[in-house]
Image (cartoon, rainbow, N blue to C red; front, side):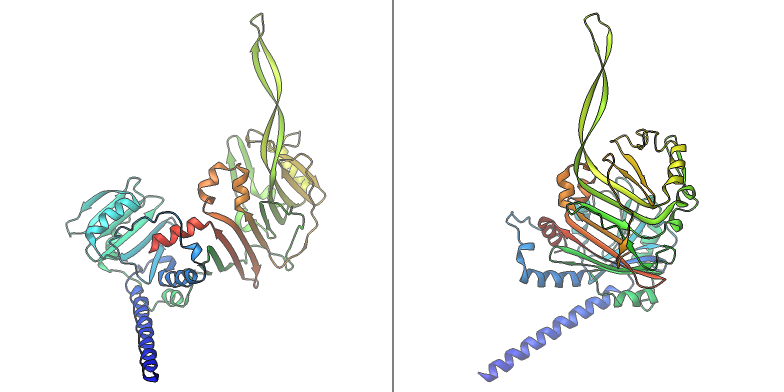
Length: 442
């Protein structure tokens, strides 16, 4: 019996060593000749880490990954998924152009996969035997051969075929020992990035996405003691506040919309380094609507009726010196003499302006209360959204497709020192979207 146990233990150990060695080999290969030497901002997607986390999560909570609905059969992709996938921008291209390279497992299966998943319409065989495909809007371009696939997505429809051919031919590639690669190898997150003074990771676990990153804050004018207004409603669907200056972002800017014009410097003079946004339950607004009807003498007569509309109750508040700010906004006809936001600028619903000695507020509720007293907080930025409640209010149809997969969000930012800040947060997903994600990467 002891001999059987020893043999079993030895077999298990050998299997674990084999699996570990295989994973290390996949990790090593994923860094070989995959990133162009001109890469700027690099994202690393740790697929092996995602698979391992999904396996552990499945054992502890299978409900996130099993669905009662009928499973769809998977079709061959034609590509082989490495341990890590790298998506990056280039210094020679705009920030909205991204590149990626993947190994090909079956070139015959790859073409129908690209048509089905990426909606590519046009395929051309080049003189060197490679195949180029592009989307109908010319933003997505792929080049592939029997061994590798290179792809690029460009919001500006930039020329990318030269770079894609470099990736296929493994020309002008980044040295695996380059500092950028060394930093990425140290990163263990499911999604990691490292760019100048920006670095961080995003991890998926139990239907959640956890973010943890650092970024430069020297230009943010964050006070030594950060603070916030403790006046948010308990049932607010959205709570956001920022205790920092905005000069580095908005200085010397000019904003033009229709016939309206604003100079940012005129507003920044009155800004007191604190702004907050709150979304509460829907409220109703009433306003007069003039219609015309014909009387018995066939004369057109004006009739005034009251129209009642459900609108979101939001409050946008600022600390600072309200008098010069309001004087400037009224001079620019942004705020009317009735202390409302000009309907030509924002026609959706009535937005009322109110002031205090140390602050100013825009709200969809007339004479809405607000306070300017700040209390201490470890954060200089805070955002929390009950996304299910926002969807239930049915006031933001344009956002529905973007927020549909999510249920809750919370982000906080702290000041680590005078140069660096840290952002941490959590995004919760709906169950069916976790299932979809697991099916997609299987």
